[in-house]
Length: 223
Image 1 (cartoon, rainbow, N blue to C red):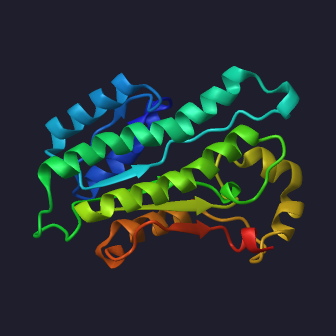
Image 2: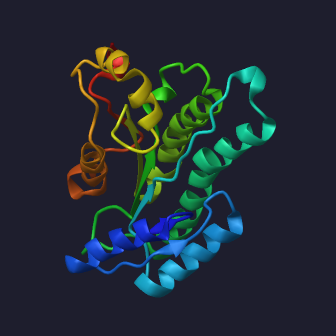
């Protein structure tokens, strides 16, 4: 369980996993830093032996109108949301290729699930850095799927809409009614509904799926 802040939250997840019989540990790493990512994977392989599934879940926003957005804020969002997924995917792929397919585990050599956003396709004023990072992630997912399919590695993405998280709190507090009116199901999504989609793409039920972006948005992008 990787984190960059709030170690207590990471430890809470670890405790939940271990209490259900799993093996887990928390590790602090900034996914935008190559050395941090490499150290994280080295520690993970030491502790767990290998990796079968990577969920690229790190992401953030630094919002501003385009004429007031600093280069630092533009770069920060791209570094975490896009470069971070590249760095983690690269390290996982190296291990997938080294180890190969273990038929007793899966018919896939490995699975990568990238966390995108409905704003990969919906324009979002005041958030051009975030939207650009997620739009690029769409292309990244598909290109990587094409490259890795011959090696038995699947790559997919989950693109949430408005979900009850800390990141969406300002939007929900300022314009909840307006937002819900644009969602076909007329409600905000729950975190577990995103988790279920990630679980599905991680499971054997999705062995024949690659290069796809699964929108978990209540129909937001269709409105």
